[in-house]
Picture: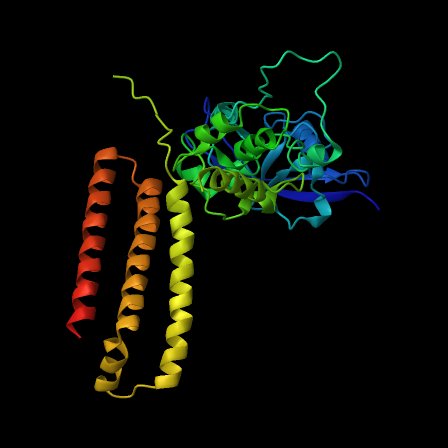
Length: 236
Length: 115
């Protein structure tokens, strides 16, 4: 394969210079070895160094380069250029304040994540080696611990758009269930108390945009369902 | 005054269960009534009146109406909670919704037992 040209329409906004955000049409030549969207963005950045976006690991582990690609949230480093219709429309993650170009302020997202106490709570003195789990108990954590907090899911969720200050959001709730499901955790009841709220948990109306966009193939809706099941089991 | 956002009302589970239970009741009623109407096949006003004169049908229809209104309460309340940010206005809308739905319940009873 020879060199190719990729067409972009990119959301640009520099609050120091621009009065309002605008869409910039721009194209870039890429090498045959450039397969992912992030490769093309790297080329684009070399062409126009005012373009701002976050990136780090370039292999779907850090979750930095989440953005809205042709209308759907995804990681630029995991998205094949060939799968995208051109011009590729790039916008920042929806629903969060824009700092510059494709960079959003994720404070609200992490505030919700921290509100579910995303760490093991166990007041027993630590054993000499480790807190053990059976293989079955460990199995329950699969599909939960892999979340990289890229915010693709929460910023695709209409309930999070309307109430980002009150609704925990799919990423936070997936993490909440990760600790509710952990047999080594001793704060199960407090965690459920913390979530039993019409806004914090019950804003989820099983729209399932979160499942649709998760770049790691996780299922926050299923985890939220399991939290509700635990609450029913506790109350009924 | 600094306005702090407070969450943690500690309710929601009962409403979530109720919304599902009322949906199930409405579905069962709809299926049941389809069967009843297919068997009776009322074609005149008197025949329709006859179907609803039955005490069991009356009771089930009222149960359906109560389920519907409770289901509506949770759904409409969710819409107010999503889109109306001012607490005072939201509370007013909640009260108006409850008042209307309680009124509808009484109205449904009046219609059914007047037959």
